[in-house]
Length: 411
Image (cartoon, rainbow, N blue to C red; front, side, top):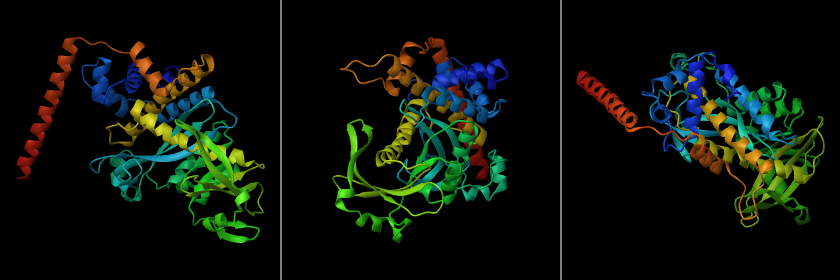
């Protein structure tokens, strides 16, 4: 908490922020202002809602503190910055940035809100260091709608690669360093991100489609056409990283690309050992890099999926029930802080107290379980529980009466 306490000028929001973060780390089955306020000992959710919506504090400044905290404790000279987006399925049309769009969370087109995250991945662990809400054109074309949702300064449209480039630039401008950036096909299709990285001398391994065209000394070819030209002896069996069930082994090949600009550019090809399915990556590095290093960076991209799973499952990254941009940015920033705490504790425990041979090393899930059980589990009496039951029923009665009045007026 001391990492971000200075961003809150008054002691009341500082203490409430602490209770909210502890609530995000709790074992509550569902986490929102109502459940966390009851868990924390408040008599109503008004204080938590005030912290997210009206209290005076800068979520972007707290985000910068989270970034510094993560880099300080998970520092790695060969760290990879991984960019990816995730969607949260939402109802209605008033939640900021929501529209019918494809989201991998649901695996189909849904009414959803999408955000892009930047994850710092090193040998000691990984955690998110930045976030940007994707605001569709249907929103930016409607200034009144943006104003109602609090999007006064962020109402200009930006693609997901542009949001990623913005976050990477913020990370580097803050004085931090990362050797690589990784991402999927969404972020390789726009040359702006690649240009920003090359200008800053930062290497990248970005997935591309099979139709991606690359220039070699023999001419310009599609990626799938180049894969067919790779001789059998050029494929190497390498691990893309360790998973829960062992190393992820694939066959890999690399083709040098022709370019007069400084640096080294290559097309990396991955082949599944059992199905033969191919995947392609556009690579850049200021200095020549061996195939093993490119494979390591390509494998780091899965770390962002692990963050989404842990961030949503352990820190309620996706359980925000807010509509305006300020409330969204505050909730996800504090959820990033909660997850970063778990990642740092896990890394420190691995370094200080290695697990015995008959135990796997501590995971973020186990750290959260032990922390909430042994350190912060609150105990409330019967009067507190009954008071909250009465408050919920009273609030629901008022809402029900309001709906009936509205229905009667329309009739």
